[in-house]
Each structure stands twice: as structure tokens, then as C-alpha cells.
Image (cartoon, rainbow over all chains, first blue to last red; front, side, top):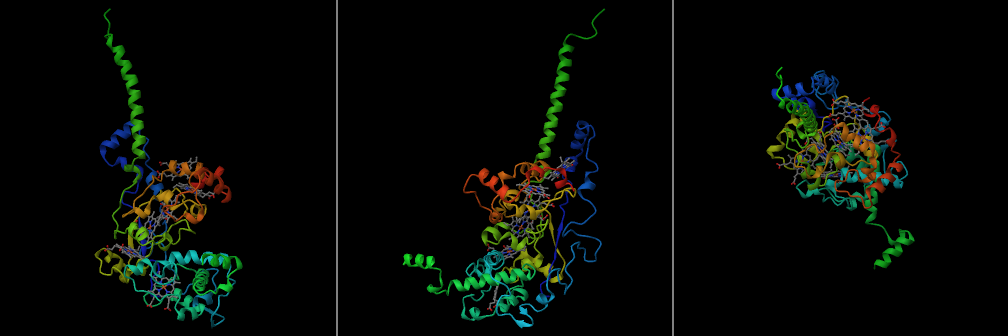
Length: 213
Length: 218
């Protein structure tokens, strides 16, 4: 995979033993010893920094020095269908035209939330490809409202999110397959929002629109 | 027989006894103050980082959601620190000549991790979990302050036990609707106490057990 997954480490600040700090200078130490009658918290240091690794801490145990292990290539997380990861976007070996589940309000809400976190910085909230990062110089993507992308099968979007596309990085790490599908559902809703016929709307909404005119 | 002690010793001894009492109380008070001061708690202390990463630029400037970078905050105890490749999502194409970003590019080339220094660091004998707080409507801003206005990351609260407990005793003063957890500038449209009490019921927050020692010291 082109995009390495976990390359980051979180080290502890040098002065990590907070309550030991007043003891930094001898004067403070002498004063405190006198006052507190020697009730210094001597064992705190070990309790506060125990010999186990917290997430992303460095570790001398592994060759690369990282306690959090990168996912070995080709591993399939528990509960995930292997096929979904090995043949992204394909259902039963065929390129998926449609989403393999019913699109409910919950799916769309989840899709919208994920879209606005992970896609909107570049594709903007409407999908026209003029997000804030693009305005600061990132290459511009085609609008999701282009006829080509209106026609594109669901699998195209799935592939792009999984593997990346040109200047666009992969979002497989951030979005598990179910979320990727929810995002597709939401992109479909965005696309529909610009191509809907008046007659397809519920009567109340038709009324509302007419009253605006 | 002549008096051994001059009469003024009476006053002197009184002054010493009471004076010592005041001195001890005063010094204990001073100790408590020192213990709560930024000198000990590290509040507002900025740490040297490999890259001077600005939340202000990225969060309020570009409008990136916390979860774009802190991916595991919703479903893990650990909020997550973005990997080098997360920075490269954007910085492979923008600011590619920036001096400041050289450590990021180097880490990406060599596969050696970027080493960020922790800003918040609880002792290991305390158990903290982000996901429960996010799910029960405690906003990032309640504990981390206005991150979107911080050019460099700093700690906004003491993270001492009394601080955790101040909220665990009465969470209604702080909880907000779940969908606004990541919003930095959210303010309640109705009275916080009324809203909080309603949400404590709705999210089933069990206030009676939140101050048990075993919640945080497991």
C-alpha cells in the first residue's frame, strides 16, 4: 500500500512527574521537607509512569521502536468480510451498480456526517470540488454533479475512497467499508438534490416551493 | 528569688505559639496554591514539537473537523494523533516547499515516526476514556478549551482529580447534545442547567456512581 498507516509516536514531556516539580530546586525541597514533615510522594514517580506502553508510546521492545504495531498488510479486521477488502466495490465478483443495503434515514445521516468530516475539506459540502483546501492550492476535483459522475456506478466511488484517485489520497484507514457505503449513499443524495423533478417531491414540499415562486 | 523570665516573655511565647500556627497554616495554604498553579499542573505550557502545528490554522482557518485527524476519539479511550500520512493527505500537494514541514516529509520518506511531545499527560494510575465522554455529550471544548484559537497546543485545564470530580459530581452543568460535541463555539440556546438535566436523563448518565474511586482508579 502506498500510504503507510501508522507513522507517528507520542512521547512524554521531559518534566513528566508533575508533583515532583516543586522539588526541582534545593530550597523548595528543604522548605517542603521541613513543612510537610517528610511526607514527600517518593513512590509517585513509578506509579505515574508504569512500565507498560500506552498507545503510540515509544518502546524498546520492537526493532522500529514503536509500541503500537502497524497492521500487517493483507490483514482483515474481525467482522469484516474478506471480499470487501480484497475486491473493493465488487459484490459477488461483479462491479456494484447499487448499494447492497436499503438506504434509510440513519444511513444518510451517518453518510452526511462522515462526508463532512473526511470529504468536505476538498470536495466542499455540496460536492462541487471547491473546498477550503482547494482554495488554498490543492488540485481541484471534478464536481460530483458532472454527468460522468452522475452515471458512475457505486463501485467507482468505493474504489476511489479505498485506493485513492490521482491527487486524492486513500480514505480506507479512516472509513471502514460500511461508512464508505454510507458516504456513497449521501453523495447520491447530493447528486439527486440538483436533479430532482418537482413532481417527485412530496405534496407539502411542492406547495412550499410554489409559494416561494 | 529573682524572676528567671522577664515579664515580656509571656507575650513573646504567645506570639511564637500563635505565630507558628499562622505560619504553618499560611505555608500549607501556599503549598496548596503552588500545587494548583500552572507551575505544577502545566496549564498553558507550550511544548517544543517537531513541527509547529497550528490548530488555529487547520481548525478555524480551513474548517477541518477534529475527527479528520483524531480518528479514534469517538470509539476508543485514546483520541489518536494523526499519522504522517494524514498530514501528507494535503501536504503532498500544498506547502510542499515549507521549511516547517520538512520533518513531516522526512518521516514520510524514511518511515521513521514523527515524535510529538505529549501536552496532556495523566499519571498511569488514572484511567481516562474519550469515547464515553464523547458519547455522553461532553464537548472537546469543555476539557481542552478553545483549541480552534490555539496557534500552538496547550493544556487548558489542570487535569487534577478535583477538576475531574467537579464535573463528575454534577455533569448537568456541562453536557451538551451529542451532535455539538466537536463544535468549538456552541452555546446552549436555553438555560444550561435545564438542558443538562434533561440530557443527563436522556443519555442515561449515572451520576450517583461517577465519583466512585474505581471509576478512575481501576
